[in-house]
Length: 525
Ligand code: KIV
Ligand code: ZN
Image (tube, rainbow, N blue to C red; front, side, top):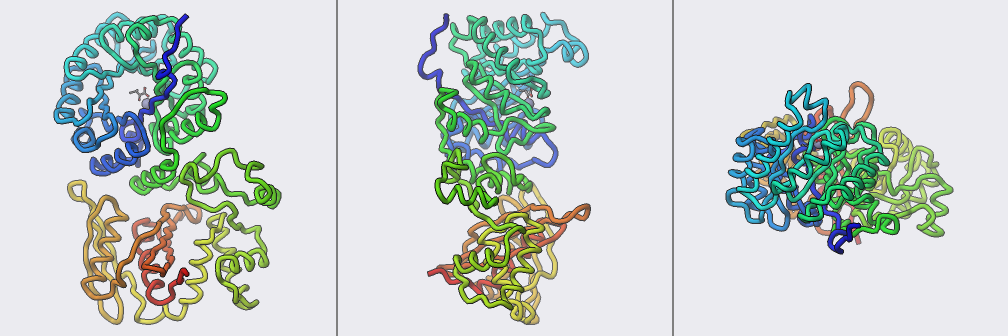
């Protein structure tokens, strides 16, 4: 019988957003963006970040190098095939690492991969894996080994390769469900058997880890089954991005372990309030919105729109809430309105947020626009109502020559740096300026600010409070909807833009907010 030490009850989080997550189309992010993500992860308490696969591209090499050299408080890992050149390349990326790094070596172990891909015997695979682990250990003290496609590997061979790689120096053994084929009971049993039958895991104090894919929608369930059965490291990605249907969604695992500690009985060291901001940061960097219903971080996940639920929540939040939105840094409202809300509900909500003088004519106008928005967005928040009221109040001003307009916009990427150029028109003048930044939003903000500042139209100490991009509007001709909130002292303004190009939609939204800030601000008292 194996006795567990207390530190074995802590689950280590291994983030692979910038490696497995980035592998999927559309999730690319630059080395600089990877560094910013690493800082978010470190602040949140994530233990290990796989920042890339150095031999696969120059950008991945840089991502690993920059994170290893610049970000404190998180261990940087690099992926390598069981080949000398991959391991040497990872070691080069780690040359000036500020925290002891990890090399993550993998080779496939299932029959399918051995026969059809590697064309190697089991003995050959073991020998290649063992040599690779020894080679990696000659550079770093921390080596992780993954038998790829472990969940479709015969158990006897899996045990043999795990034992051999631990003996060769692997400190972590990661069991991947590479193609998302496993089911929780079976996967949990496999982890339990490895834990019980591979004595070397305990002799060498090696950590058992799990890495799951979501092809059948079971990545989180399989990861949790692994943890319940003795795995003490979980590979996850922010927002569950990754190959095909994605990897295990980090926030789900964290919150399941925290909310159901009574069942799982393990410790985690994650600052959960940073979950929401980190999810939104990644979404803005890769330019993909978070699904409204994505657990923990989606816009709808704490919203209660049915009357019965709202009534229950007003009496006790425990009725329909198993964790609090504040706990995960959720940004939304408990009671958004929807197209089901009537005129009186809208009038009451407008009064609650400060619009007390809404007569019948104005109410009819707002209601028509509210319904149009609700049909697009489904849930309408207080910020949306402020935006509608500002648009109505500023309608005449918006036709005047004092209203700043976008004439043209161009953006491109040079050496990983995004440059946005905007041409604006106001008071019969046209002028342009460019801006660069960490991503398209930051660059667009700088371009607008530069253009307006140089021509004395920038209102002052303006702060970007929030933005939301990427909501799809319409069918085949889908457009992006961007919404922006800015503030200057006690003045707040909202803006929106709709375009097939999300950067242009954002620029329109920001210009609209700046115009409203100057002409029709909301004054917060
Ligand atoms: O899915 C997988 O098997 C992987 C390995 C490289 C760990 O991503
Ligand atoms: Zn994977």
